[in-house]
Amino acid sequence: MIGLIILGCLLAAGAYKLLRAMYFLRKAKRLNARTAELQTEVDAIRARTASGKDEEKAREAAAVVALGFVAEADLDTENAQPVPPEDTAAGAAVTAGDWEAGADYVDAAGRDWELRWHRVRVLSEVAAEDDAFLLAWQAARPSDPTAALVNADTAVMVAWNVRGSQAGSRTTQEQFRLFRELLLTAREQAHEAQRLADPADPVPYMVEQPMAHGLGYSHDEYRTLWSQIVSRDPKNLTAHTTAQQYWSQKWRGSHELAMDFAREAAAGAAPGELLALLPLVALVEQESWEKDLEPSAFFNEPAAAAAVDAALADLAAADPADRRAVRMRHLLAWLLWWQDRDAEAVEQFRHIDGYIGALPWRYAGSPKGRYLNARNWAVRVTTPGF
Image 1: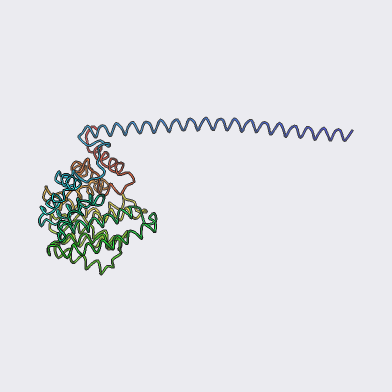
Image 2: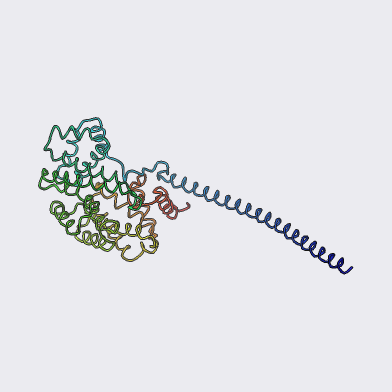
């Protein structure tokens, strides 16, 4: 009898546990179902919010375009400004094999060394893809200094194309090996171009600058090369910006060396020579390299504000027809926006709008996204009734 009672108790206890387990199981299912319902509601809210933000962004973009600015789809991410028709014509001519037209195009720059460098680069970009015209040119004029110069610059471009634009950690050892071999060959060709050149021409030495980056010239070696350039053209802006890259953290120097170089060059320039560009470049380079920097704080430090003011004064004194000024305008638009000087930023955006193949936009994962965010914000907050 006692055994039956004990057995009954055990069965009752088991039944109770079973019923309790079933109760909690059903409760858990109800909770899970409710949780799923809530998650669905949250997702729907997020979707509506995202949709609302997208609609608001689209309305803002349309309003900015209505004010005369360029639509996202029409932004040129390759060029910093409209391509001169003479560049297009020269590129088409040499592509078709007319090397004489290319030679005349470069030589027409005369002793405007900045323009000569630019025009050499236009032909080099074609030759890096198809050098048939260059080979014909060299065969017809073996000692032509312009042909030798284009040949050296083309060799540099081919080397950099092999290396690619990825960081060193994403570049293969084979790429590095070929890169170095090609640069060593390019250096020989640059030295030949220097031998043939007009003694006053700095461009064959400017062509060697990227080789110094890739081959790792020592600081003393680079200073020797630099002396060859500035003794011929002391205020060449392209040469200075390329030199600043050498002195930067990502190549053969540091943030401090790059900024020191920039400030010294800017301080030694007359208003309108545009060398006040260099401290702006140094600021953007440092911010892009140092991932821990907060741009809203860094770009508002007194030194940054002073650099922007100096650049604005330099730009105001420059020749309005100077095509180099656009490089300053791109950087000023970005930095003025960070400094909440939106009206001044809009002025620069109006000058550069439509072309964003320049620093700082090309340093972003989405150049269009960076540009539109800054431009549209500045336009919105400075337009009454926007």
